[in-house]
Amino acid sequence: MPELPEVETYKNYFDQTSLNQEIKDIIIKDNRILNVDELILKDKVLNNSFISTTRHGKYLFVQMKDAYLIFHFGMTGDLEYVEDIKYAPKFTKVIFSFNNNHALCYISIRMFGWIDIADNMEDFTKKKMKLGPDAYKMTFDEFIIALKRRSANLKSLLLNQEVIAGVGNIYSDEILFQSRLDPNRTIDTLNEKELKLLFDCIKTVFEYGIKMKGELDTYSGKYLIPHRKKNGTCPNCDSLLRLIEVTGRRGYYCPKCQK
DNA sequence: GGTCATGTTGACTA
DNA sequence: TTAGTCAACATGAC
Image (cartoon, rainbow, N blue to C red; front, side, top):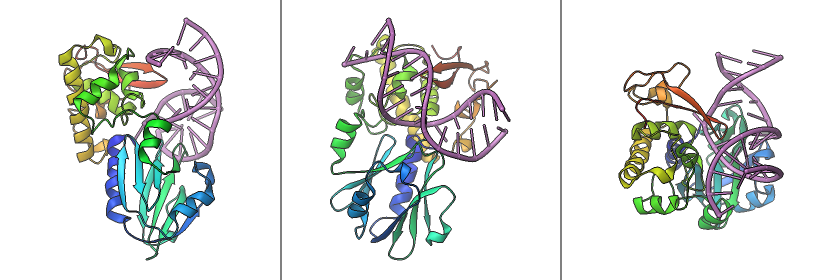
């Protein structure tokens, strides 16, 4: 499922269920989702505990004694805390089992997500993944710096994790709709006021998304999200939404409201 | 059976 | 360097 609001929701869920308990076992049901050698993973995790978590973009970092465990959820990743490993849901790929027999399951249907280990969070985000600033936490100055020398169209720009981390396909449509900006425009055509507007909309859209725990089907009808389907209409002016394809992703926008 | 999907990456071209 | 296009990854839903 995850874009930024979902990953933030997973983070909160992780914090409420899985911190500060000794990890006594890891069960790897499918090692294709591991980006790290199984032995290294076990060495870093077993007999340790999860201390705290940090989210950067769509990545969740879990601090341990001398390493970070990293989760990426792809398009169909999820976490579930269960009372016993026998309740592990379908498509569970890795189970972290605690001393009290409760367990945290990493679930992935399509296996686009993965689990990794890193010594240092900055090295991972900046050097390895080259991620831009986190879209929800960045300041306006960081946003402007991230856009320097960029000239891509607005939708591809928002989707590019190296520019800004955390915006996915659905939220890129919503952010551009709330900003009333045409996704086909290029970033270098925006004036100061439009840049500030775009920045503010990134924040408010994610704020709402986090509040709603990323559950898209509960979103208010004044948002674009419930309308982004074939023959969907603009919640603002009722025009038929237009479909665009950018970087192989489908997007919806209102040709009348978004300029 | 065909198409589509909340993501990322690498190859290639301009 | 930056951008755009395409294909690949694996699986379920409609």
